[in-house]
Image 1 (spheres, one colour):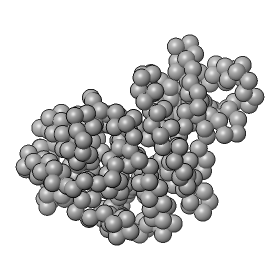
Image 2 (image 1 turned 180 degrees about the vertical axis):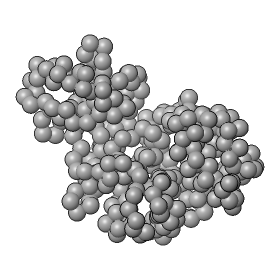
Image 3 (image 1 turned 90 degrees about the horizontal axis):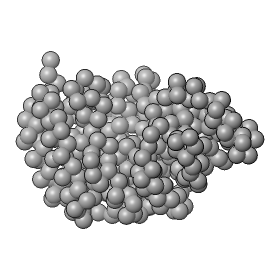
Length: 316
C-alpha cells in the first residue's frame, strides 16, 4: 500500500488542491488505502477497492458511535466522492499518537505501566456506554460471509453460530495443533448458549496498541480502525478480547493477558470465566484470517490460547 501511495501522491495532492484544500500532504498508508492531511481537523482517505455498500454501512456505524459523548474521538466520515473510479472519504482527523506503532511489545518490563491500564479502562468503560445499533448488527466480522446477528436475537447465540461456521472453514488444520478440538468447540458452543442476557453495546473488537491514540500523559484521545471484529454485543467480549490481544507476542504476553483479564474482571464487574470463554471464542473465530494452512503467527497464537483453555501443553 505504501507503493500505491508513492505512485499516486502527486496526482492526489493536485486533486485535493483543486478542491480548495490549500496544503494537502501525505499522512499515512496501509492495506485499506492512503491518507492525506488536508487542513486542521480534516483528512482524506483514498481507498483501494472497498465496496461502496460496505462503506455506507461503516459510515452509519461511525455516526452511531460519534453521536454519543465519549472522552476520545472516533472515526467519522463527513463526505465521499469517486474520482477516476477511486473511492475517497473525507473524515475528521484523529489526534494523538498510538501507544505503540506496532502491536508487538518488546519491552523487558513484566508489568504494564499504570497509565496504560488506566487508559484501557477508560476506553472500555466509554465504549460500553454506546448502545448497539441496527447498523452494527448488520456488520459481518472479518473472515465471515454474512452479518453476525442474522437470524439471532442474542449475542451469545450469534457467536455460537459463528464458532461453528469458523470451525468448518479450516478446522482440520487447527485440529492438528489443538488436540480434542471438536469437543472443545462443543463445550464453547454450549457455554455460550448458557450465558445469561447482557447489555448490547458497540464492540470495536481490535483494541491493539496502534488503534488507541493518547496524549503525552497517556490519556486516550482517539480510538480508530473499527471493522476487524466490530459489531454490537456484550461489553464483556470487548474486555476479554482486549486483554488477550493487547500484547500477543511480547516476552511477557501470557502474563499481561492474565493480568488484564483479572483487572477487567475486578474493575468492570465481568465474570472471569466469561472473559476466558470469550477469549476462546475469539481464537476459534479468527485463527485462519491470515492463512489457511496454519503458517502465520496469529494462527499459532490462537492454537496456543486454545491449548491453554483446554489445559493442554504445547506440542513439541
